[in-house]
Image 1 (tube, one colour):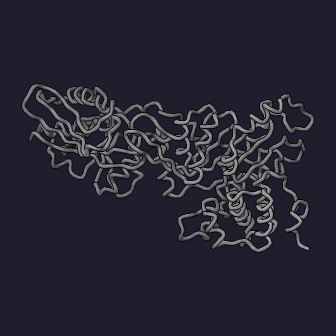
Image 2 (cartoon, rainbow, N blue to C red):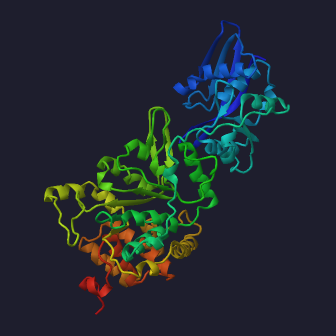
Length: 525
């Protein structure tokens, strides 16, 4: 045989495409040619494969070798084609029977000594292979845990090229030294959910109500106040209030994290909503995704089905922060490059925290703010109006009092999480049969048509809209938030009082009884 084929996978975003790896050995001077739109890292596979084949005890053909990756119009990037190329080459040389490669996909990066290193995106690749009807997939041993999460396909974890060849030949697989885990491509601490309890928060009644409502309905949240008032404490405890991910959600989130290099060998499946907290100096591409060639997911995609927390939000570059506008509405992000267009999921809860001014003392009792009016205006304008308009809940967090019994009487995370879970179950039952599961996801037109407010609550919001206190988007978001408050309290429909409370949470007003602040036109006679 002078021509043979193997199969591997190309990823464009999270979408996997089967790639046919063909090897042809012909008469001519020794030369290895790689075709099929390879990138720089893939072009280097020729040298890696040659060294790995020789150091594995096999003979590299001393003739003209052509390696083709089909479809040729699809850009190929990464080093995970190495093992498939080596196997196709040896099959063309007659070392491996080509028939044994049918219905088998192979991924993995080769070391010069023949070891197989872990790769990014193994879970997404395995999902693509399973959907294509393949029977089995060969992956690096360090990626085998995440690949085995996919049902309906046989996964073989291998340590070296020698083991792969033995598997294809149907002979006893030789023993190899266990592989060493590679350094994490991104910091694992990015996805660490803080192990903290809401019981630790002193006071902050309004802040606690705000994060409970945000967790129950998936609403975006803006916390602002002086340094040390508890904004970050509340944001970190928000993750603990959210229920575990479903099986489908876990696979979806884990696939993104696998592609981003965030999965570790100990935790292959992400079962909890991720908590992603990029620094305010993060670049646009690290937030949205990007990179040369085929783009990689950014922080907003890693926060899919979880929380994206940006502390000191006004310090982030305004253009970078404004890139969140479209993902907040659509739930996905498309990254366009000359080589490919990658689409990543990005349905996350955005939580922003900010000081009131550069010195942090504006509006604080018994404190002196040294900022000029111009500096104060510039600071507040760094979070644009369109971004603020997309934040369902806006709360000012002031330093709490020091009452001696406040810690003892505050609710723990478990108690609040139980209410959040019950509220989400009510939403899931109400929207059964639709593509939505949370109030924050339902289009405003659908809510107004199929789940309308009562006449008094509707009149209250129309009064605020006519006076300019609510935008059209803000009107819909107050309605969604009112339904969330009703779900938390077990009411079948938002009441007038709950709708008023939702309006106050939306606008940042102090939570006061309805009769104190309701417009005259909306008050009962």
